[in-house]
Image (tube, rainbow, N blue to C red; front, side):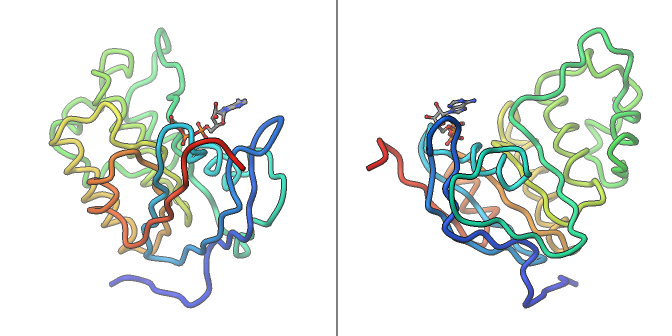
Length: 197
Ligand SMILES: Nc1ncnc2c1ncn2[C@@H]1O[C@H](COP(=O)(O)OP(=O)(O)OP(=O)(O)O)[C@@H](O)[C@H]1O
């Protein structure tokens, strides 16, 4: 049963974020338990930049990001950790984030004991997603999660996101794939593209 709450896990107000200068915002939204919120917009509109600020890593020029007390964040970045040459297998990766392997699709569960650098790009992407999604976090940030996934992987990802939200997580999902955003998210914040005024 979904764990709904009137108190947001995350509140973003008039947030402006960027690097040497602002590249996105002002943006406002809240995220409650059980919600999947989409951040959509064209390439370069600042979706990844926003996620990095939500995760506490980016530069905030104005506005606020408030987390409810005790909230833990799990952040899947577009760039996966380099694993070539490292003798780490899938089971060990999941153990590192405290993610359970229960419910992993069979096509990946069968390869859990293999080294990560022997998996395909799509298999590695799904495992990385799973390690973030199933970590013991309250807020989960996903950056272009469908990258490298085939239709089977996209379907399994959609199911995993829905199940994790139903179990009480709040999820912010960044994607340029409007069909996936429409299917996976209950609400969408659309960022404008083009040069800032
Ligand atoms: N490390 C950085 N330093 C300076 N500018 C950056 C940096 N990373 C991104 N940018 C700029 O910030 C703007 C927003 O980039 P961002 O990656 O957040 O957009 P995005 O919507 O996630 O794009 P995409 O869909 O292509 O991933 C772009 O103009 C980009 O060039």
